Image (cartoon, rainbow over all chains, first blue to last red; front, side):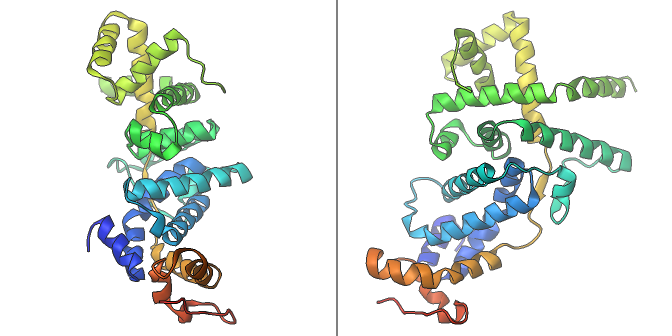
Length: 195
Length: 118
């Protein structure tokens, strides 16, 4: 058993361990996205876990017309939106890192570089947190999940044209939120280029 | 916010979709011509690309532990409330055989377990 369909069939036939393997396959991907949507490691873990439990309960309603992960993400999306409506709390990425692993984006080894990178990550996360839920969700789907517009439309239950316009507006708002950070980075890049 | 679109907004939207390679060949040619002739459009495209890459460059966080055990445990706890009722009233014996295989041992103490009909 290796692909989603086989694991789903095995689960529905009574093999609970097969669903455990589906969890193992997708838990990090789902968690990573929910962390950026919710801004909190604890909330992201809770939503991811709740989404898997709901998916297991409703697995026999999955018809396979979309990928399993798309279906799972839609469950997580609804849970995250409910969560966001209940509580708009966010935490810094430093706090979010407590209790979870992290893979660096690049290999800069020095403490100064690590600190700079951590500051930039925090600024981007803070900028995301200032966006509306709908803008943050669509950015996460496109930039982190790498979804095509038709997949985003399916998950968010929107026309593709609305996906295009909403994504554009989300990027504009993100650009505005990040504007104070951009000139500083351009200056640093120029300094690095002259060395 | 309403998503009212002026003509200019729609043109700018195409820049965003251009980044994502989500345009028809006609639209793509139109955007390419605009970028070549309009410095403001080129500048906006660069800004959108930069904002986009900031999010794409966020670290790939991982959960740090296996969620499967807790997911399966929580699912098993739902058995008394969900499975017998749905099996007998709605979907028949094919619904969620995984729940059956988890068995009464997975149910919390003191909770009634009723084997669904085969």
